[in-house]
Image (cartoon, rainbow, N blue to C red):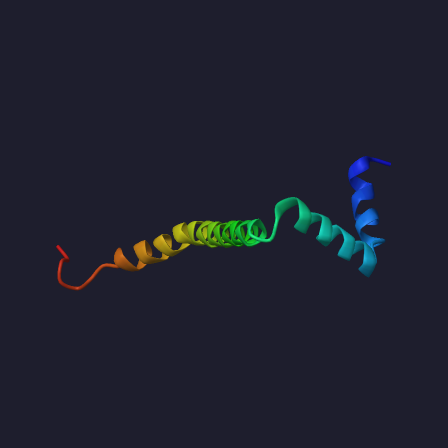
Length: 82
């Protein structure tokens, strides 16, 4: 069994008191002022990740939209027939 496959098992066995102790240790290590800054950074990172996913989806759908638009723009009109 690899080390990475045991991590979820370890985190699944934590109960309320263990989480409380872990949170207190984090509070002592980083201090009360630094934690909001860290959480703000995490929030901005998540927001940036979601924005990147949306841009990727738009980029994937963009060629499809431009093909549809090009096919409607190239339909012959009655004015310029020779």
